[in-house]
Image 1 (cartoon, helix red, strand yellow):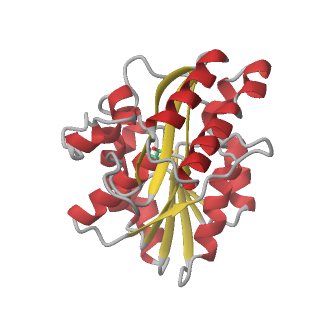
Image 2 (image 1 turned 45 degrees about the vertical axis):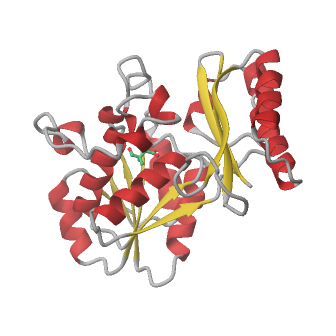
Length: 277
Ligand code: PAF
């Protein structure tokens, strides 16, 4: 695996790379990321897999964990190399943002201000801006993202569609621990007792999904029950809702494809998860 710290060397490598699958990350890699790397390798008609590691200041709020976000480069490098990634782009901040970034991608505010956007103002503007910049640098044919960040995936699909970017966005299923907890770099913030409690979020989302699959049309009923159960065990729930998969708006008609999504705090960790119905 070749490592590139500058845009110039990455571009030179990309020019020889044929059809490229790209997996952008912020590092601190777990099996969910590695599943994305494997899917990138297996994607039809791909010659080269490029991954990036860049902890993107623009997508963190003032009171969020940018400074303490785990940076684990050596371990990440070994995992990516073992996963068969061909090129790793790991730019310093001075390479990605040599001056303050004055130009930004502002996603549809109606969409970017709900759910994660309501809890994390400006987050999706930061994500869309860095991903567009990475796409301009890497020029991938395909880019893969995990479905755990469901709203992020839709923001990026919309960006690609509206800006006519020549890249296919692929969403990959969530990878879970044996007890159901969705793998996340932020799980490292959980204490041992919180880690034992954490799978309750997935169990409650599954219960809501089951109720809806069995015909419940008043979605507030199972969502309120799940929320109450989580609060009983000390969780602080930001949202727990059933939404349409395509645009995350409230369902209107029978037969729409749905997803139940939640974000909740357990101690200092803020966990997000979702289950497609
Ligand atoms: O999902 C992430 O890890 C980040 O939001 C991404 C897409 C790499 C942009 O910084």
